[in-house]
Length: 136
Image 1 (cartoon, helix red, strand yellow):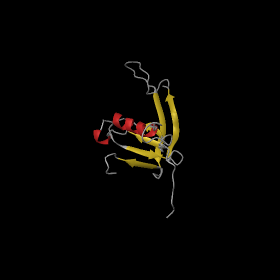
Image 2 (spheres, rainbow, N blue to C red):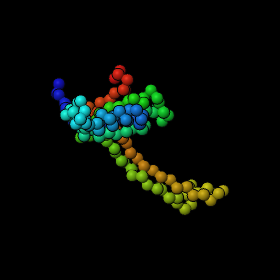
Image 3 (cartoon, one colour):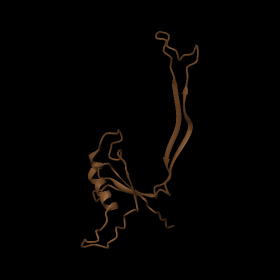
Image 4 (tube, helix red, strand yellow):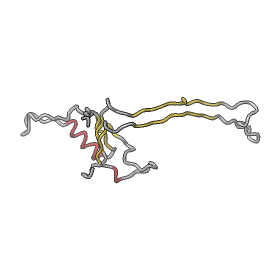
């Protein structure tokens, strides 16, 4: 088995205000020189870019799902395996004269549009996920 390493540089969370504030607190906090813990370095400061995913805590239909509000994870931007394939660029198909694109009763013309694309994720070694409730 080959050992794989990733440099995780993205911290993603839902848009839950408490979770967003906690992430910002961990990523941006700095110890005061006069504090009891002065000199302690925040190892997370500058390590991650915080990305808020407002649709992460939703159902498949797009409705809000409060059971997912604490979801968060880390990702490696250099190892990402997201791919977007565009087979047909978006374009407009204008109506042709004497075709079925004209409504004879209203004289409305039908303008069609078309596009073809696909989005895939090939592997998941570059992303780690947590449900935020201590179970996964």
